[in-house]
Image (tube, rainbow, N blue to C red; front, top):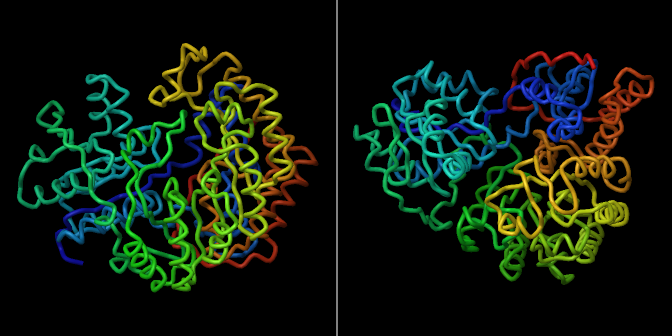
Length: 554
């Protein structure tokens, strides 16, 4: 690597689970975050562990891998970091990335010391708070204080939209970066920052950034970026095998074709923009050449528009790509048998179905374009073709009642998607439904809300019912696991049957999280351990000593 790196891009910071545990358990038993937390972990040998750490525990205990193995979904190369690195390198800059902050701290420190990056760019795709950013910045400052630290992504957009100028400045000061990029894309701003740093210029010339000028942050000219998707294609030849692994993420489009009333993403991301079929084909060819076995398409509406989706499938069939693929899937846009046949023939392994509700009235208020019958039909067709299905639900949206919750329970037990998850509705004031707050009687914000037909406590009770009464599908948690853990685990050597056995046993064991010391709880934990019998795994990339979990006292 050339001495004097232009940019080091840092991906996800995953704080220790014990931090989350301490914060949540300080709240009352009925607090929404705590109720979610109780279905996001298992009690193993007296400690609370998220699902991926449960896997790490039994991999070590049962000799499946080295005792310090650290399996983590962050081992899949962080797509934002990969994309920005590729974008910079293809425009004449020197750049590299790190996907997972805590697991790669030693490598990051070495890069900071030895390669002396002019700019350190921090992505924020998955952050709901600024704390993970502040931790990364403090670490960078301690090793390489001369680097210009730039932060961009959804967190900055949310903070800039939600906070008044004084509070926003205080937040920027606390995170302690030099520059904050405020744009739904931001790659051009980063390129200009890197070129400016190389020329010794201040960030004042860069559009769409807040930059530290003495004791204050100034915002430069607002000029929204509009980089064509085709110009952002990733050159996968730039990365070595250890950076890629067997599972990779990519995208073929930007933004979303729909305007669901609970979501403000399309308003922030702009109009739907599609990559050309030839560009997608070239990128997938590179991934296949690199030995990637599982490709995750992160497009919000991968099968929209339908004619393009069919051509994508035909292209993958024509190339006989050896990988299996995973994506979001819109049932409302796939009503014919040919679509499902093409999916199966092209290597589709699993899809994420954002069903949200099985009640047609709630779906209509959500501005979903599908009906519960359409979802039933789609799950049936996918299952017939051995395509794994994951169904995601929002509980408590305006219009939700005990009767609509029962319809969701009945739907899950009848349609039986492979896996499912349900979460309480998060009331976002920037989402379209907020315009109807007066009509629907909605008050509050976030997880503290009520409306004409339910409140957050009722949603929590409904989630308890769903978890207890759904028997036809298997629960998947949210904390660092989710649907997207499936392609990662497949890439490490798990089979579908082994993952299902683990998740079924985990769901039964999870019911004892509040009372882990009983004979029944111990028997359930032993079933989780037995689910690892016969598992043979590829070693993970990461070895990381983990902080000792808190002991369970209540």
